[in-house]
Structures are given as structure tokens and as C-alpha cells.
Image (cartoon, rainbow, N blue to C red; front, side, top):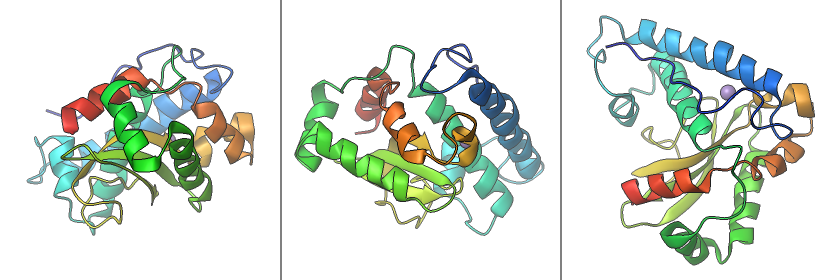
Amino acid sequence: MAFELPKLPYAYDALEPHIDARTMEIHYTKHHQGYTTNLNNAVKGTDLEGKSIEDILTNLDMDNKAVRNNGGGYYNHNLFWEVMSPDGGGKPTGALAEAIDKKFGSFEKFKDEFSTAAKTQFGSGWAWLSVKKGGEVHVCATANQDNPLMPGIGCCDNVTPILGLDVWEHAYYLNYQNKRPDYVEAFFNVINWDEVSKRYEANK
Ligand code: MN
């Protein structure tokens, strides 16, 4: 079965003023749709056809640029929409909050590290919070549409991303122009920590 563009879990304008409706609409209907279509074309008729996106990315041949770019783009945006909410913001609670405190010292220190990763990623890419089996959390950034599932990517090995922030200019330029740090700060107002916690529990 072909990969499908998942339904956006809120309206295009739901995350305003932090993410504007026009950016959201273009990002979802053009960029994410494009990765989805191109991924389907790239796996069609190969032995990757019919496999889950997680299976494909975890065992990826990194020289397969079409699957690396479009499979990454498909997976990353699936996650990105789900970890934001119009009711988001605040801080995590429970086991995820404890894991963040244990690793970084405090939520504020985690926020600093994640924000720095997002702001200093040169060019296009993503910032990530991931979890390793055993419950330890990690922050890293990757270029283009790479992500921590991919082999040898330079994030901790054997981790599952539970929070991702798209820092491609297409994600913020209409509203923020060159001010990526303002976009990164605004993202913290829409993070759906309930969803991130669910993913932490499922993958720890
Ligand atoms: Mn994007």
C-alpha cells in the first residue's frame, strides 16, 4: 500500500500567531505532499515497497538519495504536525519530565540545548529530542531531511525521535523572514507535550 499524506490534526490557522495559516497550508499541501508522492515513486517496484517508513529509514542505504530525502521528509513531517497543538506549550510532566531533568538538569536547560541545536543547524534541517531504550533522552540536529532513525547519522545510535522542529526556511520564512530564533522561541508555545510523552512512553 502506498504512503498517504496523513490528515492534519488541526486547521491551517490553528497555531497562529506562532505559525501562520499560509505557511501551514503551503507546508502541508505542497512540501509534505511532495515528499509523499516522491517517496511512493522512489519505492515503487523495489524491495522497499510495502515496508513501513520506520523500517525503511532504520535500514536505509544512505546512498539512496531519493528515499533518504523523501522518506525522511515524509516521516519528519508526519511527526512534526503531531507534536504541535493549539492547546500546546508549557512543560512536560511525569516520566518524560523526569528524564529531561535527569539529562539536562532542568526544563530550561533542555530548552536552551534544543533551541541552540535548532538555531545553529547551518542551512536546512531539523532539531530533535529522541529517546533511547532505557529511557535516556538526547538532543541533536540533522541536515536536510535526515533524522535520528537513519544509520550513522551522528545523533545517538538506536534512538527514536519524539519531538522534531523543522528549521527549513519554508517552515518560517513568510512570517519570520531571517529571524529563525524567533520561530524557535514561538515553537515552544505550540509543543504538544502530551503527544511527546506518549511517544516517550512507547519508545523508552
Ligand atoms: Mn518542512
